Image 1 (cartoon, rainbow, N blue to C red):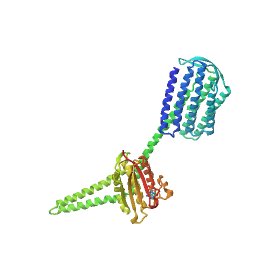
Image 2 (cartoon, protein in one colour):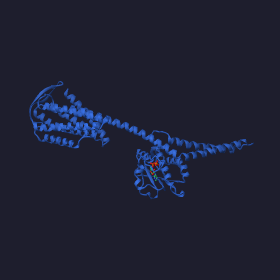
Image 3 (cartoon, rainbow, N blue to C red):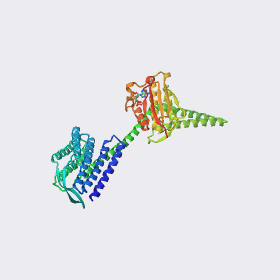
Image 4 (cartoon, rainbow, N blue to C red):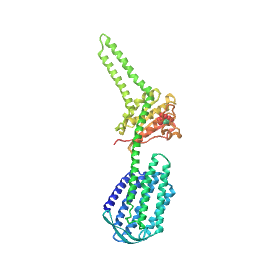
Length: 482
Ligand code: ADP
């Protein structure tokens, strides 16, 4: 039964170590996962070594296995301490280093001393029955009492470190701090204290029982994995909420940009509607004549149809742009996307006497992206450029949209260049920060959101500092759709 139980615990420890190791491989900065992986490996190897000495037939065999016990114990202790240090964030560093040095000394001496750190010699083994299985325990042995006190001191320092760090965390206040402090006290410090007391009662022959660190290691591992799992779930929830908020913010910003374009778009809408009204009047006059000219009427109807579809087109584009929408990654033809955005911005550009030019490299590959979000990026850059050139004379308000392929990187690079005042050197990084604006009615979210959107597409958005003398240049890259 002992063999089955120990093997089972070892398997659980290895499985937890594998999961934590995998989590660490995904996020290398997450040292807590690495420490839990190390603790899992330490717990499993501790169980394996313990099975070795619990089944030893001679004192020499027991001693050989027991000597190796210090290696997983050292690993496990270090993993627990570093985990608690990171997890609570309030431990005293000098105390941690003292513990590390003391436990390293124990480990080195263990392999220098004959038999092991604890035993000078093992005289006799005894057999006892635990859970229906006969196992070996030390019957008579010579200990190293002074060194044993040294090891005991290191263990009490570990407990002092944990209690001190937990108390400092507790004092920080708030339910999260208290829960973390309690988890460390109840899940790590108290079980460690009971194991220390138990081990020393066994070593000094007060209690007849097998030596084992596996239950404590495994218990601490389960408590710590539970805490880590909780953090992972909370982080995931926070990420989902962040994505939702970001989408809401992006939509709010799209509506705000449309608001800035409202008068130009209304003007663009009035044109086809006025033309339709005029055409309907002309048709009515034609119908009232003695011999209505059917050819003329057909031409009028064609005009009405064309104006109507133009109006519908403007409204469709506006509503598609302002609707709330879930991200939909599709292969996109950049020419269409750019034309779409230009048709939304054209009237605003004309009203502001800005001349829009397009320099598109022929045969651009499709890019993978969300149509609405990428239109938002381009529209933001163009609206900013139109505002920027307003300070220039009417005949010097130029905006150029460029697109070229970067074969080596498998990217398309788009640039929006304008003849405005450019961006002062000291503001080059500032303009991408949320809420930074120099406009009286600006939200300061356009560039920040645009950068987030481009980065979510695996690209980069930056302002080209090399040629700022003549206005601003914003560039962004997008990956080809494979
Ligand atoms: P908003 O347009 O609401 O101010 P943005 O994030 O789009 O927010 O822009 C932030 C700031 O960056 C603008 O207020 C402006 O000072 C500066 N900026 C953006 N584009 C240009 C440009 N093309 N030329 C000069 N300054 C610009």
